[in-house]
Length: 285
Image 1 (cartoon, rainbow, N blue to C red):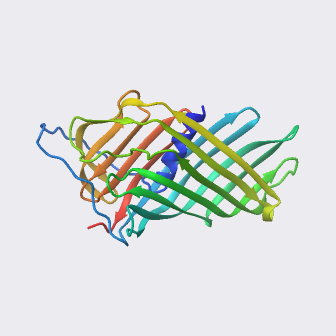
Image 2: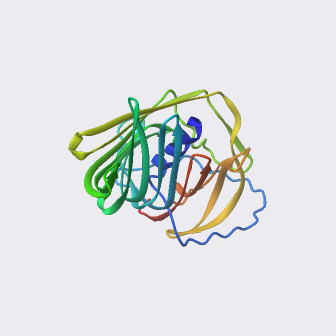
Image 3: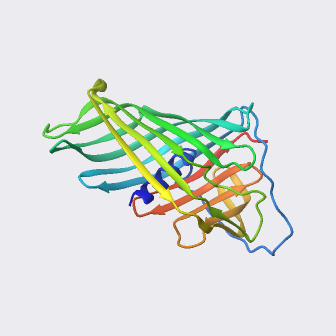
């Protein structure tokens, strides 16, 4: 169960660039061709904006339960630093969601539910990716603003300040890509430990609940695969894209288009959460 929520959170942070409500996807058959795409070169100021049409989290561990369902508008990645061996990417966006949480506190359980309005909240954070392969080295994010919150046994919802933070600690890079990309490409999941430090806070700091998620992945052969290239239409345009997916199970599918140097579509469906998103705009050249 912990593994599933970590994958969902990874997908959310990543996608905290993301994607569509009314996109049309078309497929075309392609002959096997001698073609590959190398790792793109990003420059400071390059950006990609996504619409996350849906994200869900449903996590339970003992008395702890977190359920959230929402979307992210104008989720934007902007390259802010290319001076070192990694790309530093700033992320911003506007989140709308409903949530219900049960937090164990001593011998009691604090039940909280509410609504997050995009006009009164924002997401900020950073993603660090290797220049050599666009592997994820680190990421963090924060949702901050005003939410309509009900704390039992209060009978009504009140407008209260909230802050939700997430900071990932990875023992090694997460291999989202393995360039060059081409048909019949496979790569492995390495031995990987992920610790996700999350804090739920509100009411001017009166409530501050830290939660740590931890998962350890054993080496997994052929975890990622490229078996087809497709013509994919998203709000940003129509692109020839590599379909990257889990080789076993339909847990995740995402598309990379060399023309935009990044993801254009993602679909993750896990037992403890998921996300659907698409590219709506980019200035990558």
